[in-house]
Length: 138
Image (cartoon, helix red, strand yellow):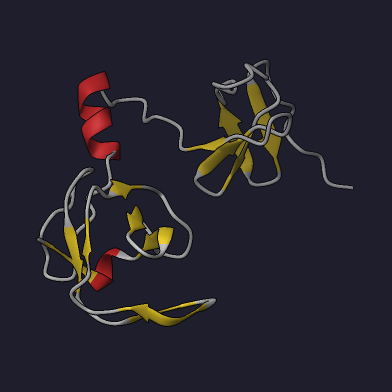
């Protein structure tokens, strides 16, 4: 049986080495967090987050952590922008879909699933998520 290095207080040991100073969960303050790839995971509440870099300042870390989302043309999108759909989109459960040229007002940028990073409401369709690659800034 292999002997793993003994973990000191505040650290976790595993066969690949020692991870030092794993932060407590920011939601539930649990100390039983662990690293999974580049995320830190809390097994008690299920919260996952990217740990802050040690050398990053508060102002510099916030700017570096923000994601820049660009439209199909390359313009940077922001919350509250108005965009236009550049190609026809099929919508499940709706025979007509969304036509090219449809304006979408007051978008909200989110960390969506499978590249769907725009949360919006389209007249006649309701709330949905769109990919930034199928819209352009109006």
